Amino acid sequence: MPSEPVSQPSLVRTGAKAGFAFAGSAIKGGLLGLVLGGGVFFFYLGQLHGPGNTAARAGGAGAFLALITSPPLLVAMLLLLFVAVYAMLGVRQGRAKAMQHLVAARGEAVSQRLAGAVAGRIEAMPRTHGTLQRAADWLSVDALSKQLAPVLGEGKAVRSVVAFVLNRLPLSEMLAEWQQGRAEHGEPVAGEGAAQDPALRALLTRRINETLQEMSTPSRKPLYIALGVHAALLGVGLWLVS
Image 1 (cartoon, rainbow, N blue to C red):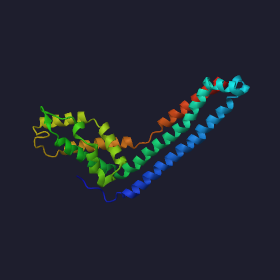
Image 2 (cartoon, rainbow, N blue to C red; image 1 turned 90 degrees about the horizontal axis):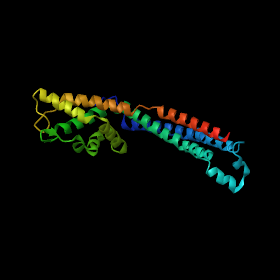
Image 3 (cartoon, helix red, strand yellow; image 1 turned 60 degrees about the vertical axis):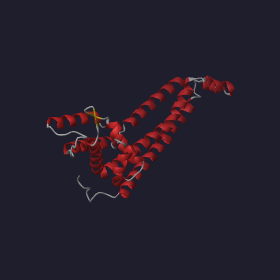
Image 4 (cartoon, rainbow, N blue to C red; image 1 turned 60 degrees about the horizontal axis):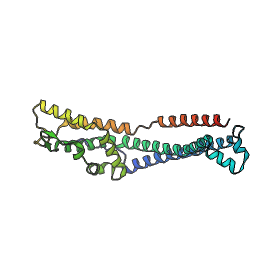
């Protein structure tokens, strides 16, 4: 297995960059929620006393009862929820940016280590009635996380990366392709004294690296969807109180 490049940044430096990236995006999401979400909410509250809402202008208990059973108030409550929506989107974006720093600094090493660990377990996987047991029963997130500890350390972040990769890899298809290739060449399969297979490790390394890149790519699509829904909801609310 190739050794890690000496030019790789330290875990402390990588963790600091990832932490700052996460904090920055989370703060931006919170500010967007307060300014945009809160601003639109209070703007709409001012419109509830417009000419189209006579009950609200009447005042008293009758106005309150009319509002809590009216579509305009429902719209107001939904608009208020967007304060939390924008904050959560900021956290989501922050996680992706933090993972981007992690993958940029250690992605190659993580791919190689995780591919080697997965390949070793696949090659040692016992056979039942001529076929390999289910990969989900043989591959453990805990065990693989411990093998990645020298690269990423230990913690929930490491477990989440390993779990994400295992959930996204088409292991069944890859196992079938690997077994077929070895059978065609007359080589022993898992559990029958099979040696390390460089082809299996290369395949796993490539697919794991692709999965990590996908995981660490921030997407603005959820934000654009939220902005569109937010604007449409405000338009419906203004139409109801007009």
